[in-house]
Length: 148
Image (cartoon, rainbow, N blue to C red):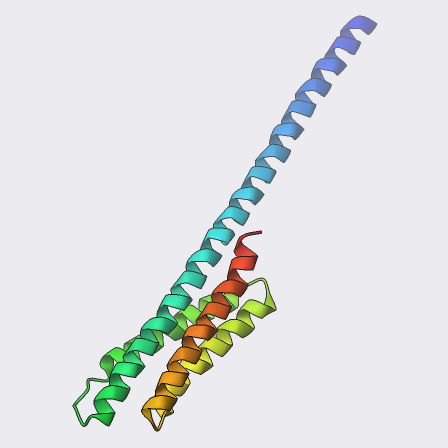
């Protein structure tokens, strides 16, 4: 009888161990999948933000040249690209783990917006170059996070 109880206990322990092991494995796989999704979402958000800032830069420069050359310019693309940039900025703000990434995104957003107030071609070009540099700093900062 003791042999039967001992065998049943051993089988029960083995089954319980297998069930617990499977449960823990399942939890770890879900966690890893969640981290992988978050990692991919961060990459997509960072790329979208850099693209949006550069597109807004292009639209602001087009508008600046049109206004300073006396040509008519449709502002709709400027407003659309600004809206896209702000949406991308908020995604970065929500997803970035590192405060440095949020600060670099803010700097890029503020720098690109300064283009519209440029009073001369030299100032506009300097602000355009500063925007490109701010986006590069953002990308470098973001790359450090997503390469971990």
